[in-house]
Image (cartoon, rainbow, N blue to C red):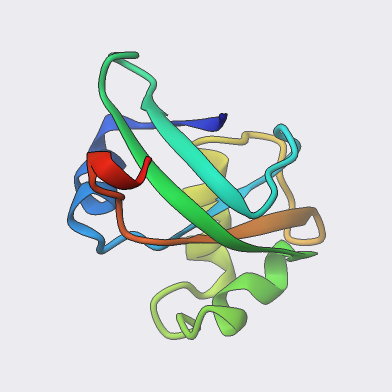
Length: 108
């Protein structure tokens, strides 16, 4: 199964279904289907979701695409992304990965 690392502070939102997308830069290719998030601090802490779509775009387009332009002006988005990717720029091509709420064990 495909997987992606996730920082522990975001795992809670994945588990409650509040987090339904992730923005990734220069990481492994993800495609529609099952995907497991794995905590960067505890590899036993996981959540399985179903990826519905992966959309590639410039980082500068992400806030508008996700309807978060007011929350994420360019400077805020860039600062947040640089916590994970120090070299990212607004003109970097990123993948926006859309996914379901976490799946119950029976669906995995």
